[in-house]
Length: 308
Image (cartoon, rainbow, N blue to C red):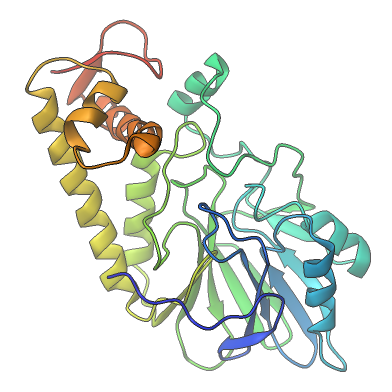
């Protein structure tokens, strides 16, 4: 199901769909792959920018230089408040006068259990929360933003991040395109890392996306996805298989996330085991919510869990 990367060049506009251009930010990393994808939606008039990216002067200039004669940026939208997606929104807004739209500040949409874990401290996170992010307008699920020849329907799709939005795009071409941020990508499975991420929310968001027809997914990192529902179904099946492995490992006796990761990820290099343990913790919290497992005492990142 993993699709090869396209020949995207950093800071170079590339047509990836009807009325849609991608500009790849030059910020490659283990979390961002070849970099953050910034998208321009619209042509010839008011243009929307999705996911400006990190603070990067070269990328800011590339976004502005990509505008064609007669075009102006009228809307700035972000999928989620991680440091590789939102920090450039402020500088871009100041340069263009365009307002910033998002689901809300960094922690809007965070579930009660993740708020509880975050308050304990010490968990950290993958790409890092942009706690300074404050959009001009908070979007609700199903809200529509429209411009010159395009419209974007906001879909609250938490899981990778609590304030994560996807955007169902209509450019008048009759071609179902959805910007999926970091929820669905071709190069990797989405990171679900508590307390930023919530696996219960992630699985629910997969159902939201599966309920909507689409021909093309445009993710926050990596190449486009031309079999959207096929990729989604694979991601759901992958998570269910991992859940089954964790339950099997728990049948050998109560354990914390790190110990269970050692039982499940038997071929994983040692330097990747902390990430594996974080993934197991996400599953354990989801299973706790379904009353399938229970912690000994208060729920913490280091709790010992047992089958119920």
